[in-house]
View 1 (cartoon, one colour):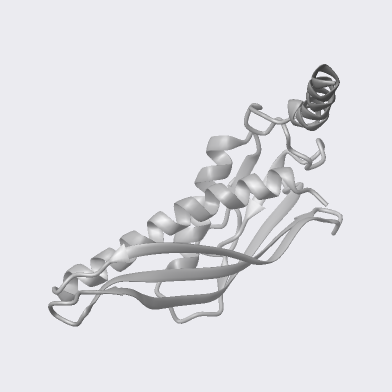
View 2 (tube, one colour):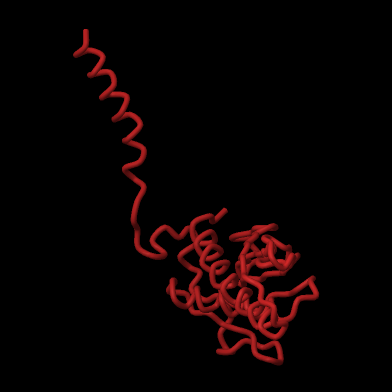
Length: 186
């Protein structure tokens, strides 16, 4: 009787373990579901619907850097006049983003001074990868990211930390976005 129970438990264990054997490590871009004919991506500077200073630029630069680092795509970026560097070749797809919201909220307080000691910055973006023929390859209407940063009593230090927090957040955002984009092809 005990042997039969152990045998059933072993079978049940293997039943649950079997689906996990396909999971695990894979090379960067190996799980990409973007069509193989997409080799060149245009990434114009993200649009912004918020009053924050240069968030869209930091996020665009981070996404371009992440695409260049983690993928084999040739990435075309917009120059100051709106044309893409490497003109003469058209992109197979265009990645567009819009910063929809950016909020800064107090997170913790210093009990001795009664002032905020850390903040939470939250950014929500709409991101879309569209093929040259108009086919939507990836879309996320509410891709969100958060970053905590410490405040300081010195206002100039606070302003400097705010920019650093946005750059850190842009880096983390870009890692998550590129991963999601590569593995969530519609």
